[in-house]
Image 1: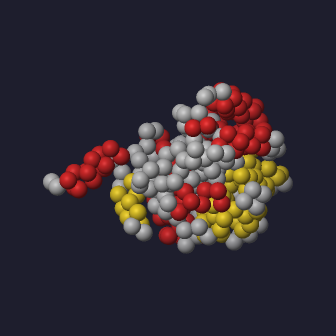
Image 2 (image 1 turned 135 degrees about the vertical axis):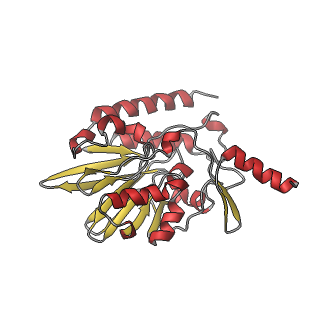
Image 3 (image 1 turned 30 degrees about the horizontal axis):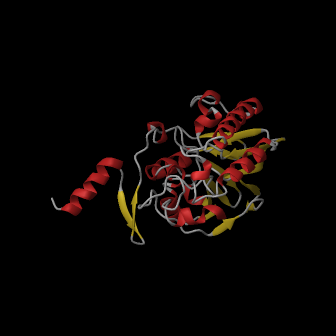
Length: 292
C-alpha cells in the first residue's frame, strides 16, 4: 500500500464516510456522532399542507402547493432515499419538488441537497450570507470548515435576503435572516390553511452556539456576536401559532408526536416550550459574551 492509498484509507476510517469528487473538490462527510441523525422516521402531516419528511432527528419539511412542492432541508447524504421514500409514503410525488430551501449550511442539513436537486431538477434557494459555504460544500464555514468539503457543493438558483418572499402556487414563505449558527442561517414564517382555520407556522433555525473559543477569537466572522444578538431579539419578537425547528429535539417532536398518532396540529402549539428554549439560548449567549 503506497503513501497516498494509506492516507485515503485513514481518512475513510476516521470519518466513515463516502468520498467523491465534484469540480475537483474532495467531499468527505463526517460520521455523525448522533445515530438518530440517520435513524428512519415515518413521514406525517403536521398541519394542512405541511408535512414532516425527515429522519428521527434531522428535520425536513415538505410544503405542497397546486404548482409543485417545496422541500426544506435534506439531512445527511445518506438521507436522500429516505426522504424520497417518506414523500412517496404520503401519496405524493417526489418529482413534484420544485423549490429546495435550507435553514443552515451544515452537512447535516445539506448532505443530500445536491443529489435531490439533480434528481428532481428543483431550484435551490439560499440565504445570500451562506452562498460561499454552499458553493464550497462547507469548506469556508467559520466553525467546521476545513481542507475538504463536508457535502457536495450546490449550484444556487436564487440568493435570498432578510424579508424576501418565496412563492410557489398558493403559498408564500417569508425568509427571516437569523445568522450566528452559520452566517446565513435563516427561518421561515408562513400561513397554512386547514379547513376553516389558518395557522401561522414558524420553522426556526435556533441560535445554538457551536464554538468553544470566545466570539472575539473568531476572526473569520467578526460580526458573530452582533449576529447572534440580532437573531435572539428577532426570534423572541415573532408571533406564530405553531413552531418547528431544524432538529427534532429542539422542539420536542417525539413528545408531541408518535408514529401511530392521529392528525393533531394542536400538538405543535407550544409557546411555553418556545419561550423556554429561547431563555436557554439567551443564557448561553450571555455567558459566551463574557468570555475573553
